[in-house]
Image 1 (cartoon, rainbow, N blue to C red):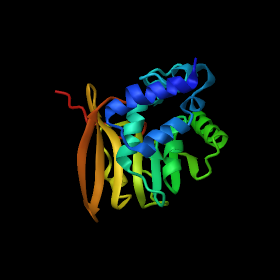
Image 2: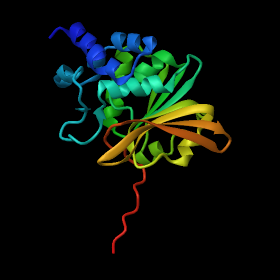
Image 3: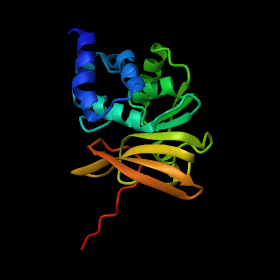
Image 4: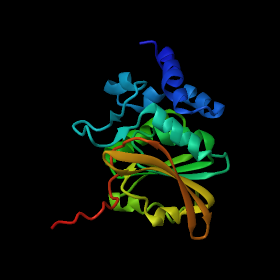
Amino acid sequence: MNTELARFNMIEQQIRPWEVLDPAVLQLLAQVRREDFLPAGLRGLAFVDTQVPLLEGEAQGPCMLEPKVEARLLQELQLQRHEKVLEIGSGSGFMAALMAHRAMSVFSLECRPALVALARANLQRAGIVNTQVLEVSAAEGARGLPAEGPFDAIVLSGSVAEVPKALLQQLKPGGRLVAVVGQLPIMRARLFTRAAEAAWSDVDLFDTVAPRLEGFAEPTRFHF
């Protein structure tokens, strides 16, 4: 496979048509080697418009999201070089690597030990030095990282039924949070912005689906 041609086609045929037009984001996607953040046997899927499972035997478990989804979320965050970022759900470390190139520091939380090891190794190999992958329980991940907050930006690299207020409260005024929110078959990527001490605005970005992040509450099911 011609890797650089595949990368070019991914950007031009998948990512640009999804309204990812920020030149800095597009340049970053051309530079950071997405394939290096996948297990060796799955690197052939790095440029395909699909989610790639990261744990053997868990097809519906943690995955690398589609290139266009990661790119659109990154663009919507509008990260600046002086900013501090929190990610929940490290996966393979690819999204953290992208954000590390645009922000001052990135804290990434992961509850699966195998993925903690994978993300740390990938980031080290890529020469990323301003990112920490922290191993936490699923419940701790859902609570964020208040000891290091407040954050300029938070990204949930997976879906949740709703975003806990505890995470929104870890944003600085003007801070942004992106997450995939909802229930199958309808989920939407949503951007939250902290307007004041206890006020947030939100806007739906696009429809998509993503595997659930562990540790986040689900709606109560009523039985009659």
